[in-house]
Length: 189
Figure 1 (cartoon, one colour):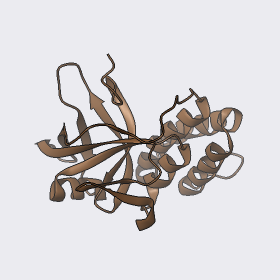
Figure 2: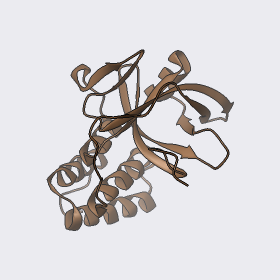
Figure 3: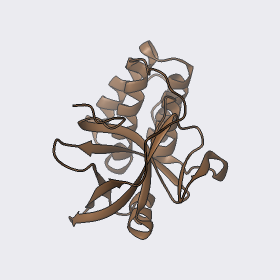
């Protein structure tokens, strides 16, 4: 079921909170409001609890998913969007009010309420590119790998890096290089 930019299932976006950007999945289930699961101790979690807002940024540059998984956004990479901030390079964004509705030992469950209309900056069709998708997948695995050094995650990342090598363009290759460095993998992995 299509719901605009956020579709049923998990839609990967770059979440922007105050002076911060990070990739995250927006969870959308039929009959429910959109949700986020935030890991305690992250800047995104801290900002959402403190300020109560987030913008979901839709970006067609795979590199930014890998970059913001591990590095902070520079001030010039963010811009005002009313009372919110968004990525300057976003193709589209949605501002949300965000409220914690459940807490576990390690996470917060957050409900999202649209605080405005979807804003399309660069209309167009995003092509399906296995390299791009592999960057997003590898970035998610890498955020967990750097904490656990799990061999299972390392194998998943290596699989994704192989897909990126075969199917990705220049930006996907740059993202793969960044991920290899963050994970401590050699160029041959």
